[in-house]
Image (cartoon, rainbow, N blue to C red; front, top):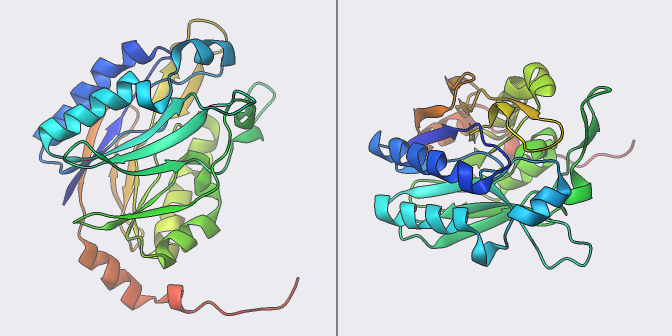
Length: 276
């Protein structure tokens, strides 16, 4: 299966972002990809909660989700919408950061709500409290496709290896890590963490990404690292998109998963231990 990883530079305006996203999804399909992946917050990247309340929609009325489902059906592709910011019915008004796997008939084959929230102080000027606006999910997701079993995750989940081990032990052969990774932490940790997750699990890791400085109507503009990455089950980097928006391609062969796991069968070597 050929996969196409979409790299985006979205603004905080979902209507403005949608045409470019659809064009790159179509370019990926025209390039031969039967599985196309977009980054985290494909519809809107913003830290302004008031603005998000104005422009975000619920799942059943979100224009980005509706359009991309229609495109997946027209193009006959599997489409991972890395995540969308969506309104929920939560009493505290927090949003969902939700990933969708869309089947070639346009149906939603799986949903995953990001579990780990990016609440960090990267520097004096780079402070994030994702949990103030988004509520965390509480369920890991593995789903079957004709080409591989997929284990779903989003961005900051990457720093929690037990999640990926659980996904692999549940049968995942491809791990998806759509991201809007911070430009500072990305430069330090992005590639090494993605390669580690692949090596630890013997899975392909596919990580479509946001990139660059993201336009915002008010307040601070966010910067993301880019470098959408595909990693093989043995840990080799198969593609690196650099820092420009576009599409990168990689071939997925589940036989390579079996081969890597046969060489180092660490998924079957867990042992109980006491302490600390």
